[in-house]
Structure formats: C-alpha cells, structure tokens
Length: 190
Image 1: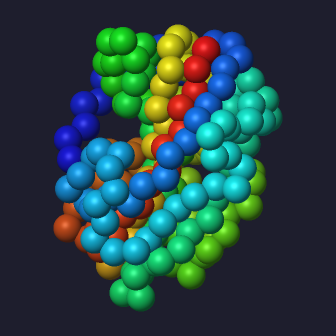
Image 2 (image 1 turned 45 degrees about the vertical axis):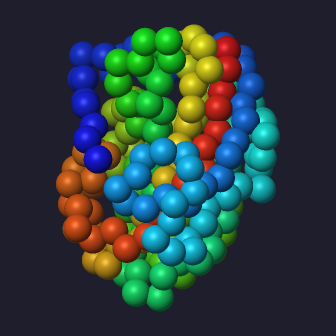
Image 3 (image 1 turned 180 degrees about the vertical axis):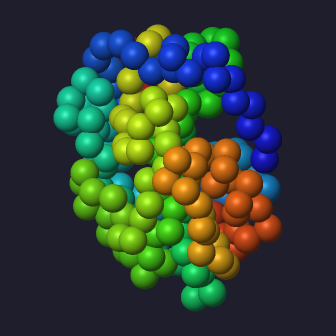
C-alpha cells in the first residue's frame, strides 16, 4: 500500500458541522485497499453502534467518542492487533488530497473481542493522529461525503514503537507481518 502524506494539508482535514453516516463491513487481504470482500482468513470487525448510520455521538458534532467495536475470527497465530481509522477523502471528496488519520492503535491483545465505546483497546498504545493527538478523533469533514475506514490488522509480531509514532510509522513496522486484515467502512456527510 502506498500512502501520500501531505503535512501542509493536515490543518484542513476535518472540520465543520453536523452530518450523517452509513457503514459497510468487509474483510480484505493485506494487498487490497478496496471495500470488496477478499479475505485471507475469517477475521472481522464490526460495530453495534452503527450499521447504516453512525450517530453523531461518535463524531465531532457529538461526544467525539470511539464507537463500540467487535472483533472475531482472529487467527490463532496472531501476536498483536493494529487498529487504524482513516479518511481517504480529505479535505474534499470531489478532489481528495490526503488521507486523514483519525485513530492509530497498536499492541492490541489478540484475545480482544469487544472494544467498548470510548475506550482504548486492551493493551493498545495510541499513536499520533492527523490532529497531532494520541487519541480517537471522530468524523468531522469540512464538506461532502467522506468514507471512514476502521481497519484491523492481525500481526505475527508485537510492534515496539514510540507513542509519537504515526500511521506511516506503524504501517512501515508491520510490513511483512500482516497475517489477516478486516475493515468496516462508514460514511459521514455534511
């Protein structure tokens, strides 16, 4: 996977007013960045907090808390999990210029099955998001309908990274160590 990081554009990623969301769940292999179902295994990620529409409580227009997430089918060989939430449509879906990182978490216990609303996954370390914070930042697009990818990776290693690590650092560290991947996708419109 290739990711273009434009530091200059970071300040324009996600700001604005109320909107709506929808979601789709898929399982993909590590070489596929589409929303089609193409899994290496059976790992899945879903949320009881949204199916076709994400309530505003999970966005900047509400309480800006992470939604509850459920994980299943983690491969027995998994040593750790990584969760990345990003928006490839920033700042404008009609002319996207960057991927806005909303949440970066690694070191998640592979035995985790439920991640309660507003919590960090068990044993997880939160990295730096596009706001420069080490926490969850919910959907907050400045314009148009944006897609939000909740991506879960099962790794055959435990990553040893600084808390200041970004999504790019995590992606580089997990290259060659992904044994399964799953995602759920939501959209938010302003």
